[in-house]
Figure 1 (cartoon, protein in one colour):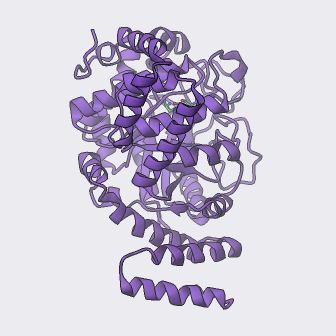
Figure 2 (cartoon, rainbow, N blue to C red):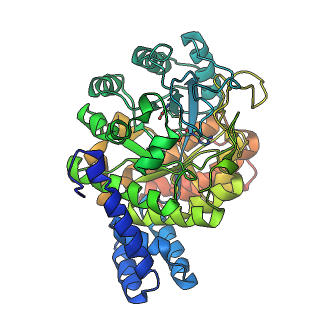
Length: 472
Ligand code: SAM
């Protein structure tokens, strides 16, 4: 029985409700009267239900598609302006006792080189990340109670927050580790994590059980109910995601939105972020072996519809995707991207080739953080290194209510500019710095303060006259 308020996985992600939704979407995919009604609801910028969004996903009418893309772009602009939040993953350990068939970390994979960073190695990695200019990390680890117990994760977080290096510090540590207990989530909260991220992989229970044949992760209910335990443990920013390619995408899309509706119904706050990974080649893993892979057009449509369906939820794209795909989905809704990523355990401070045998997946976008920052600015975006919300306690429902009232712009925009300025001064290459300084001054002209505007005008004049002195 479908019940979004239930705490049981099979009731809030009801297989029956998903099948009914998919049937409803197929029946109505050419019902232009209904589609126009749904688009009108979407234009209010308050989101869509999983049923409404699924109808749009099934619709193949080019005119409707164009409207979907235009609306996604508008909502993206209205809620996120031109800011793009920057982060990098840090792989702590690839020891894992699970049997996930798509993941190179799976227990039976003898081809993968197993590694676990010591606290000293973490220090070196983090210093290398700080030297690039990163302020926000996503910690990644396999599930292994012997090698990677919660104490190891907690100690690593403490090490990371404790590192002060030149002008840098990591100010927000997000964590992507396996589903765990309320007590462990409480410990993660106390350690000061930002978002707890856990990908569902697939919402389809039967497929989930086939894809996760062994290990603790094979328990579908325990995995699917993890976000409720995380919330119970006091973590109010959680990040959802599915691994596209494992199941039919329309099924996953409906499941993902039902999960978001469930969190909102039970905890009064939806997911902080949604990630949209696609399966990639990795040691012993051939994406071609999974028959539900999606092409770039379908991927873009999914991103646009997530943006429309859950306007307040940040959307994350990793370096699994190429520069071209990232550019396309940034416009349609993505608000956070990684840059200069290494998916190897300990890949940041050593001149190792990308694949030393410990990588989780092949990185498509191999550019450095500075190249990504410059590229974003050339596209008109403001790369943001801001982490203020989390330190100011603007998390969970407090963040969401600021977001829903549109107030968040007043915090995010100036903070994005200031943290970009900090990046440019401390880390940027000269060319990046020149582009960024001009962009910041232009953005400052938009701020409704005479004083700020006159500083910006003087600054722009200086740049126009060929000055390389970018101090205000
Ligand atoms: N062990 C934790 C867990 O079980 O959730 C952390 C997960 S892992 C470090 C991060 C994510 O990478 C996984 O949740 C999965 O979706 C994704 N992943 C695994 N294999 C992949 C592959 N071959 N290509 C792309 N992404 C993959």
